[in-house]
Image (cartoon, rainbow, N blue to C red; front, side, top):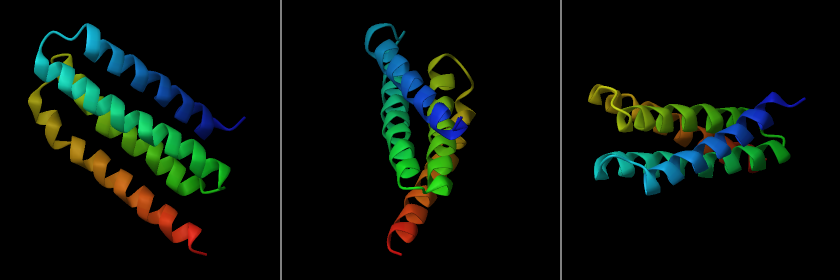
Length: 110
């Protein structure tokens, strides 16, 4: 079993759930925005991870799943009332995503 593909698929499911909750059940506009942004980034990178796996680029795929999780989960946590200092962690996930894209670009050029 390819656990990275399973995690990417679960990440996609979580992103859709977060986006749906943001659109229909969020307590306030800021929470809805965090859920929407987190869901969008997580979903894009879940798909990117699956594509990278098809290209046999496991390293970038792992970074897409991990970075997407850190980026999105910090936003989701704040949407549900976690301390706002978690917003300082969110860019770490974004940086991991950028590194994943750069690594993928490096791999496909060869």
